[in-house]
Amino acid sequence: MSEPRRLGGRDAADRVERDALDRLEACREAGVDPCLATLLVGDDPDAHRFMDYKHEACADAGIDTKRVDLPADTPAETVYEKVTDLATDPDVTALFVQVPLPAHVDATEVRRRVPSEKDVDCFAPANVGRLVQGAPRVRPVTELAVDRLLSAHDVAVAGRDAVVVGRTPAIGTPIAHLLCRRDATVTVCHSRTQDLAAKTRAADLLVTAAGVPELVDGSMVSEGVVVVDVSVNRVQRDGESHVVGDVDAESVGEKAAAMTPVPGGVGPLTMAFLLRNLVAVSEPSPQETGG
Ligand code: NAP
Figure (tube, helix red, strand yellow):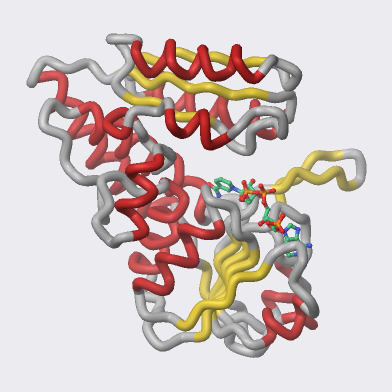
């Protein structure tokens, strides 16, 4: 088979970012200066790196931020208090909590403390409910990124057999709901799935979000599959650090009709939608962030 079509995300991300910056200007003219607060609990270097990118993107756009990073062994009560502090800070217009949280922290308790109107990633319970009911107030940034990537490249979704690998509330599950809303027939796989290869081989649209480097190789996909690799995994090769997805790009690329590059696929769009969502929730008359 010839080279797969490259489903890059940078051009579409530029458009989303321009829209965010236009809205930022309008927001400031209306008297509101957006400020993003972030909370990260844990010592995972990748999570810290992704948080750095978020703050750098805000700094580039001239958006104020407040960053709270806590060690993994922070007592749960301290974490809850921190969320409430950020949520009630009058300067903070938008709030992002990094997941996963350590096991001793009750994620439900954290979600409950994020005000729906400051929530930039569909984390607050009421916003999750609205999303599932098909009336979103704010959509998760990675789900938005996958949706826009598919649309920007005119990838047909309706009627397709879609397989999503990963089922977390932040990433896999909202993507599965998205594909279902777009009329695909969706199978969701996870760490307890039996015979993952049989499931992925049945996909004509495969979305991977497992966070396992090169989990899916060429023997696990069918000819003509379209692959969206959401994962950003750092691996050491020949003494150097590389970023790879969940699919082995070389062997899967021999069979795929189209696939996202990693990096340069979903990632740039996710960052652009974070900016867009944070401006949207900060607007004096907040607009829904769908689309
Ligand atoms: P996570 O919390 O590690 O969850 C991984 C999911 O994959 C879980 O549902 C897990 O199943 C499943 N899984 C793990 N190993 C598996 C295996 N061997 N076979 C099948 N399923 C398996 O990760 P996350 O927070 O959802 O993030 C997923 C990936 O997205 C990560 O690589 C992250 O870096 C990436 N990400 C990318 C962007 C972007 O902008 N591109 C943004 C955010 C996150 P169980 O539920 O059974 O544990």
